[in-house]
Length: 183
Image (cartoon, rainbow, N blue to C red; front, side, top):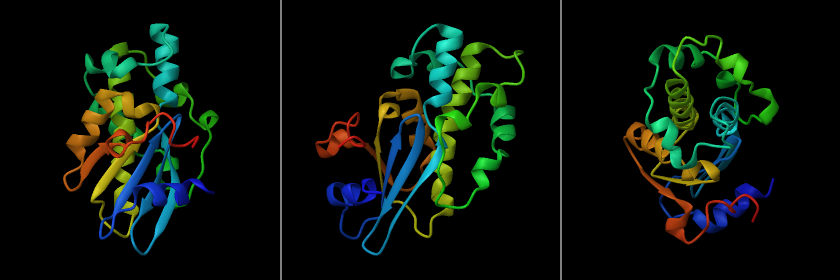
């Protein structure tokens, strides 16, 4: 895989632990410091959000996180989804969009659609943040790219979860977040 080497060439900072997170259909990361490069898929990024928006709101995606921002996080679903097997697969791991189906996450229709979308958005941020706990280092700088970097609700959730370290989008470093992976 060449992407981690590319990430190191454009984002590495001396004496800093940097986590580059691409939030596409599947979220993935590259962790970089002076000693190591680690890279892996994380789990669903936008795949569930986009499918949900398509099915329930007749939209391709939640532009800027606007729809999800009007919902509430359902803690009972976060607790349930936190037990998903894919979260316990050791690094490195690889996923495909087709491995994550809405029906596996949404077994009940008793919640409001906006609350479900809000909870799916929060869960994407939650599993990204959770990745730090399996790394041998803490993260100083988080650099977010991919389509999910445009979801302001997801970024807000991630910023609230990250207690140590700073979060930036790749634009801060002069790189369009929509094209980091393709570059």
